[in-house]
Image (cartoon, rainbow, N blue to C red; front, side, top):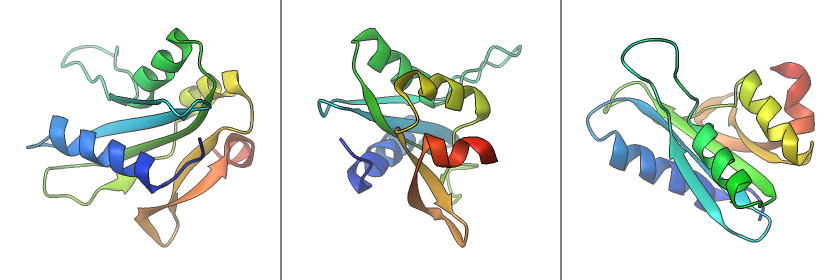
Length: 128
């Protein structure tokens, strides 16, 4: 499956459902067979053991031996903040490389971070 607005909407819906009264991060990923996996940030109160929002979806794809093809992450600072597109960090980019440079990634538009554009891992890797 290719990156599309439905994937973004799934991440936004999870963000709004899971973090109703606060900020947070949520992600959604497609696999080649059309499966979708979603996940949220793990930000424990103590220590540095947090995990990026994309991690759960990445691990679900790997658990089921599925080819991950597209991923999107969304974020907001507070319940009343705008929802923006969040590019994957360097660690997540390394994780995504497991499926090759053709993975499609939602990145924020430079003129409006609430809107997305698609880039492949190959396109964003040198610029993280």
